[in-house]
Length: 253
Image (tube, rainbow, N blue to C red):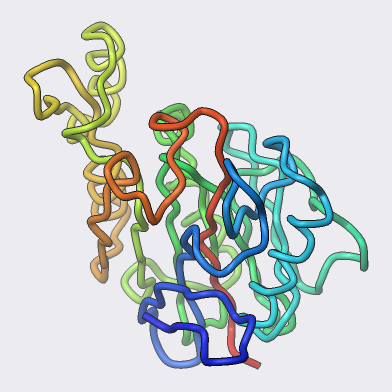
């Protein structure tokens, strides 16, 4: 994990190894300027936080990344955008997408979460990276498979892709009605789970890992941090009025 140095305003980011020439990591609540209940490194403009604070937080994350970071408006769908250059200065969102692919070292891509699963993908040899927002609806709709397919069109191969499955709500914490669990598990069986208190649940990280494996991705790292239990991370289930942290990936210039 990288941390801020004395006198630095770089946020602490949990970095992951996705191969040579790739910068990838997950932010936390730390290192930002937002006030409660969004304290501190809230990166979303859509949760009620002060826009000026979000802008400062995003600027800090960009200084960590070393390049502009592109975000999308996430809609729990299967829309994907491929970026070959940074978005126009001042653009807050590149559109309504749940996965962003970059083939240009001058722009990193990010997804925002507060219980959903952030997935970072990279094929260093092909020079292709992707950030994926995999919530319950997106996972069932096939967003992970769609992101991999988009990377393949840019020259990646599944066996070379490295994946990092970031912090999200754990199966033991994500209680859902039994009918919903059955509906999701009918599409992704590995999501079927039970909470720590014995009720029906969904294990989204397990579902994401299973989909990655079935798609031919063999290099998978999982950060087993439960957003619902971990106060260092934002969780919508724990506190509906809250911020969002990010999964960020880019090619090193």
